Length: 294
Image (tube, rainbow, N blue to C red; front, side, top):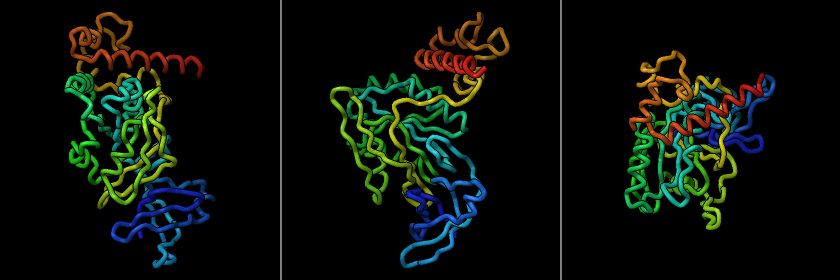
């Protein structure tokens, strides 16, 4: 019997088999011997030992399509990054870090701004303009008013999706709206610092319908950059590609060189100033990492 690992707690793996339910499984010793650890999101084979109590043994891990390190999860088809449109204001440098990380892992991203009910329309127009050319769909929703949930569901259907974003953005409320079986604890927003209280305790997949799953992960306030050469960063900013042929120098970093097509596009308003400034900051961080490596 084949299924997908939804969560792992204290040596037990909870495996969802479509149309059969969730089985509590122990992993065979062969995995420890081979130095292989089953991950949330793995497709696995199980031997059922007790159908009535839904218990079994995990006997084989099927080949992985992908693997993320933070959080440790396998077979992710898409990432949904959730920020609040307001209260708290979105942290765009954090958003760009996430986009870079997922681009390096070749995981498609959908950007979601929640709390659209707090906007008079000006924020949405501005944020749409900033990320129109980033290569990712951008959705604006209000979980509170039940707006846009159907559009998010279209992105999730038939996929295993990791949901990430800072605390206070409404991730848990969105997950609660998308499914009925697992109720996620929702936190309150600190009035003093405009940050949410982290409510998620561990990584788990939640079954929505059929072969559609969402993965809740702990909220984050900072995000590391992957190990990569600084020259690779520009490839994570898809909007640069159309203007790079106009650069005088091959391998242009788009920062200090003259006659740079990307910088010219920036001056003409064809490239987001906010996105470009984040690029420059991240490039500097990668440059510093390289110095410390050698």
